[in-house]
Length: 237
Image 1 (tube, helix red, strand yellow):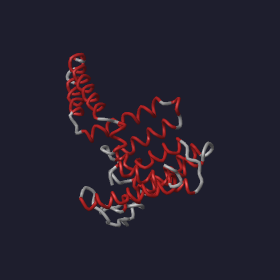
Image 2: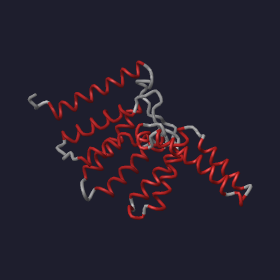
Image 3: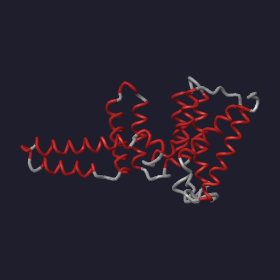
Image 4: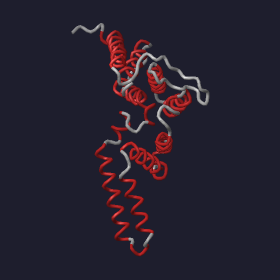
């Protein structure tokens, strides 16, 4: 499913379940629920979450910076010839990589910077930095689309937020799980327990087709009805 569909379905169902269970829904809960709905796709550089965090304008700026850096190596590092030329060529080659690959490079650089320089934000800087680097190197629907990835995310949320609000890790874990279940209805499915080859694949839809769009919109419609039933049915408009 597409990123916007994941936001609507995972977030809507999660908040509805919390509402029916009389959990207190706060802004942090909504924020974590929304991020968790998109988090499994962080290993996809063109996903909604990554593309919003690292927009094309930033990528173009990064490319321009690399070209300027290559020129500086070439003209200001003549005393180190021919190594300056070699370094300039390598940096230039990186600047011409596809957008998808450049996002991976940027994620690795940001993750490395957070680990090396984010001492004031430990343990968040270390956790986020490692997450960015690992996800940049993983294939799509790899670790993040498994029960291992779900467990890791729940543990991170639990140990970092449970003393403040237990609803946060519950909502984050449930929203992440719903993303995995949504992907399991596609023709590709997911492998929840690698290295076992068993694939959870209900094959109800194929992303990008008109039949898939009908099924996707159907899930969105049902989610909208659930949200209305839980939060708005008693309102007098």
